[in-house]
Image (cartoon, rainbow, N blue to C red):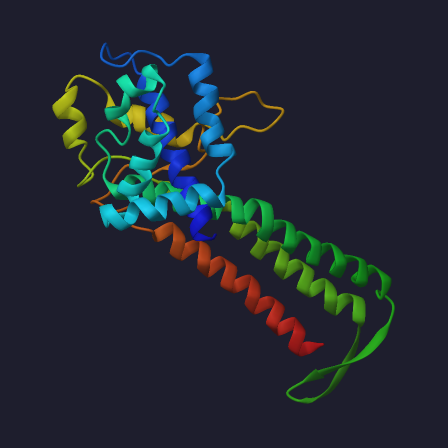
Length: 261
């Protein structure tokens, strides 16, 4: 979720779009060679702090963060004729939001899948074990601030496990949205260049192809997000509000549990 991580995702999205354009069938941009694809993949997988600082240096001249990423990518095309000849297809027909919203979604996707859900799962597992271990341990209950019918420690912890499990599924089930439809969401620049091409279907493919794993052998440029078809210049970010609200609900459950303990 750092700025360096954000830059890396921007590079990933820019290059994914670039590679997809080479496979779109346009006479002006032939499919890239396997060696060139491997080189481009390395720009993403080997992205370092040095690369991030180089982009920040370019930004001092451009005064534009996404343009700095674009120029950095083009700088990596030097001495590679195949890439130099196709350099103007980097960021083709994109507005900055096409790159930014998709990068944000990738950041949230990986934060959710690699950090947040495993963390919640660990808490649920620990609480479930405690619920079983103390299933028969009696404890005093209360109602209206007074002593009430007895319960067990395990049952009260099981309540939290049930609530947290539901909250976890809400977080996991939210579709993380992304759009790549140009400056006002109408594919204007795209259609000016190739009016007979199905740009909406193309953008959907770029966004929705699953992200690869070491075992899957899928397209290494897959982003694995959900396509947002209707936007203005920006993706409306309603999914973010839903996502953050779901996280807040899980935190509320844990705060409640902490206070009860």
